[in-house]
Amino acid sequence: MTERLRFVDRQTVASLLPPILEQVELAGEVYRAMARGEVEMPPKVGVHPRPDAFVHAMPAFLRELDVVAMKWVAGYPDNPAYGLAAINGVIVVNEASTGVPLAVLDAAEITAARTAAASGACVQAFAPEGWGTAAVLGCGEQGRYHCEVLRALNPECEIRAHDPVVARAREVCEGAVVFDDPRAAVAGADVIVTAGPILRDPPSPLDESWVEDDGLLLPIDFDFYVSAAAVAACDLFLTDDVAQYVAYREHGYFHGWPDPHASAGEALEQGLGGRRVVCANLGVGALDAAFAHTVLSRVTE
Image 1 (tube, rainbow, N blue to C red):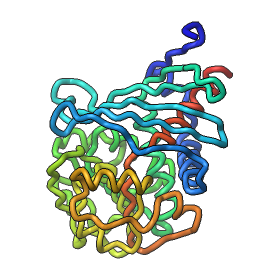
Image 2: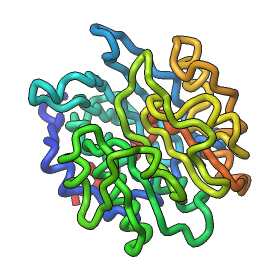
Image 3: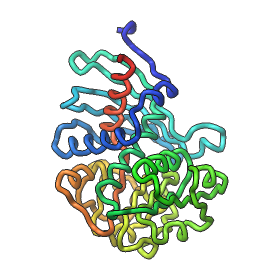
Image 4: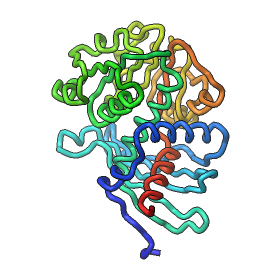
């Protein structure tokens, strides 16, 4: 068994990921497969060794691809202060027919890429037609990856960037317009991505008065920026995994937030939409499994 086990480091993973638009397409396909019941994926199992830190196990089985994998991922929001990445982990891929482990992949690149690609699938489906302005609040790794996806979807779009560390906002992507005030950054934006840290007691300053009637709000940081009032005012509230969202809410996150209208996959399958849409993607193991499978298929080509 050990002779067959392969380790794929982050640099190699990055070199083997498909182009961004193919990543977006893959994320949308996985969401649709989840909605059709073609994915076995229990809610995340987690422990919390430090305040606001987590270590999660995220298994998934994709029936159509016959892929089984699990991500073991840690999120420590204080790590950057010590020169460490906030997100660290590995993805273990098993042979579906025997259970034999086939590979261990560094999870950092896949986590960053699939999160932004999932947002991209939502932008394609739920952003206002002809969208041209995007605001990114939080310009760390996820902010950078989201800017790449936004530019891939619309090379002419204006990206407005805000971060408490101004230097990060200036460096998030070429041509970004930097704002000191997050409210000014989102004013009139068609797409809003919030990518702050995930905290137990978040400030949640973004209320319904910040968002125009036509717009897509993508809080990938849970409720760090986005308030319950902003979500309650939307026409359509989605999440990638409703059961996981409910579990998080029961554990104290998303305080006061309403129940979702549907999952992102269900909305894609059914063609749902609205003038003001909130899609809170939590991150699902099915995406990690699909992206890891894609990388491994390229390793062996």
